[in-house]
Length: 197
Image (cartoon, rainbow, N blue to C red; front, side):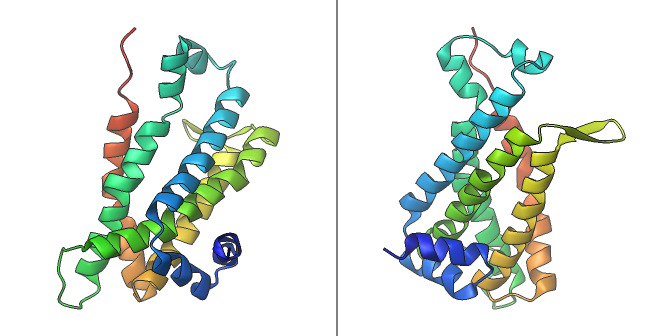
């Protein structure tokens, strides 16, 4: 009954609410929250940019359209690669003598806190992606306003959550967060694989 209030508390940067989510270890519920948030964001993004040439080129049958959402790839990445990377790096950087290790309980508690947080952020930014589909162009790179906001929110909340979940200093949490970016090429590889026609 307190799951949603705790999730809203996390959005208000309340450490107690974050710890409550982690202590419940409701990993599957967190994964469902992430999946729903990502699905809504991806559907809105694809609807808004359906007329772009690169999106039109990906049109095909319903199976191909589903895989173009990158939902399965995102769920696999965050649950199998990214959350474990954060736990492993946090333990290695914490200086507690634990080294590059992870227990099942740590994995479940981190996933139970981080996954619903990321899903909720995706859900919050989806309307912005719809109502402000414009691109911000930096040099040769164009990124949508919604994606800029999403990346800023994900960075701020993830950094804060890492610091609070693992009792790290801000510098240690920043180190974990920056080192976790080395896992991002795996996501790129996962999303670059499509079903053949």
